[in-house]
Length: 83
Image (cartoon, rainbow, N blue to C red; front, side, top):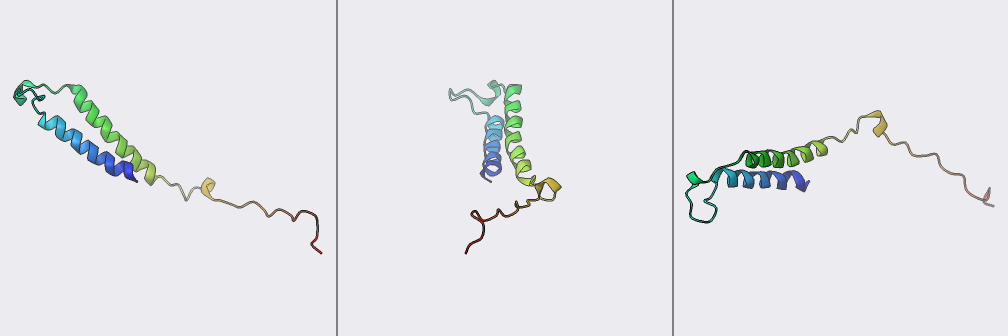
């Protein structure tokens, strides 16, 4: 249950990092810093992690015939009758 929640938080942090693009810590203005397409691809792929976790949590398949559990028949008591 933590993966979707933390994943969404991480995607928001990454999105803020790419959109705000600080000047690389060297005092350069934001206009001089280019955002490569790989940065956007990284944000999209990071968003796939919580999306996949959400889909995996939602797919329980409890109504499928192969999901029903039938306990095995009881085993006989060893040694015959208890007298």
